[in-house]
Image 1 (cartoon, rainbow, N blue to C red):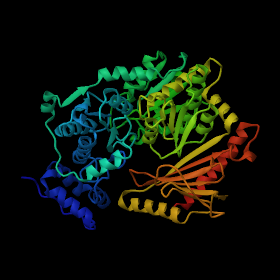
Image 2 (image 1 turned 90 degrees about the horizontal axis):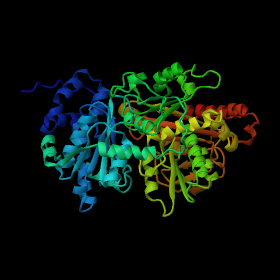
Image 3 (image 1 turned 180 degrees about the vertical axis):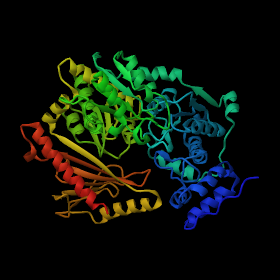
Image 4 (image 1 turned 45 degrees about the vertical axis):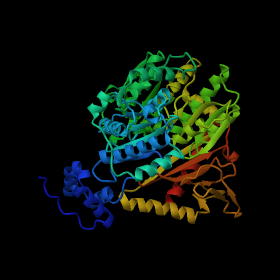
Length: 601
């Protein structure tokens, strides 16, 4: 006989109260009763409200959030609902052979990722569809590769990418190997919303019957071979420090370095231990976008006088990089040593295009893609090499994958990039790939033979195309009240846009949600092409390289502000001395972000 539940807290909304009553009385949620009891005894009102007031939304890519009991948390029930909805859609839209083609399931090193992966497999198999479950943790891009390689109808990754240890998630993929995009995303969402009964089978029984199949090594070999094919030079004289940040990266980045013959590779051993708590990373946030996550790797680089630091996130789809400074070497804070995601993308793009042109491998109709918040410097570089550029994609690498899938006949994909440290250089994979960062090490080795560094390389790019500076800042809130505040800020910015920010007059306000752009000075409105999304862009020049973009997060109560400033827009800031230009453009970017943060409320 189970113990009685503590009283529900006073002040709980009617919606949260109804959710709690359902989860404490319905037998479908019996497995969560102990956890709910603990939450009622120890949790705050806001925490309980947030866990039970609503159902976690299956967004256009899946679900992601905090683990725990309740309909607005990640647990076996909400994962099960997502898996059941996907299974229903696979049976409906995957074709006559969908059940045999199956669904591939991968999971990372996060807490309970293996449990959620097994549960997903049991539900896919319970719906009469073959579930291909990796035999251990794998990188997200390997899942993308595997879906295409075996001809599966869909795929699932259990991961919350670089979120805190408290989080996990479920991300859906379709038969092209890319994350689900229209019409599949909306259709899967509709199926998830109808889920009542979850059909599942016993794991061991399904293994015996062959409806769940474990696999791995045969795909691993082909995947690593694909990664090795990215190489564009035989230069290997480079000392590398690499950290997988307690994630799966040794199976992708590590294997690629080994396969390509890099001998001077030094692993941050304590971070090679797979551990979803990310215990050696500051605040437990294993995000290579954050220079603080590179601290141990930088320390090791200083000890051995390394040329480059590489770091991948827990599911190995993003890559971070740090480089020594010209005079201080590694004797500086990680924040001064790390490249941002735009700088990494620019270096990779220029290196890939340069080497492919030299080797006669550049397609006559090559394609480079980027998201709308990614630096325009990538576009300038790509066009100078004669590439076609798709540059205003909504945020999320799935939109780059979708463009690859729709490429015109005769086109060749060359490179895709997003500012949040996601890169791809091979169309056989349709999601961002941390192992693309191995090309950074190759670039460093190539430059080393010329007596140059990657920082020199970036400076030469700035001299040719213009100096660009990007700043990103976030406004974060907590819980239901925080979500309402964030929505209110976006509403005010949209309905009453400012005429200037940081003392600089706005040239145009581009609303990607309405598909319209307004020039405040003239009142002229024009139509904007591209997918619709909750994004506002404030440009300061006609070229638009200098701008600030406001975008609310799709998974948490947060607005991200992206500032880009460029000397390409402001000839008066250009000096023969790059350092002076840098100071001027950096100052412009800082003034814009300061002004934007003052507008937030």
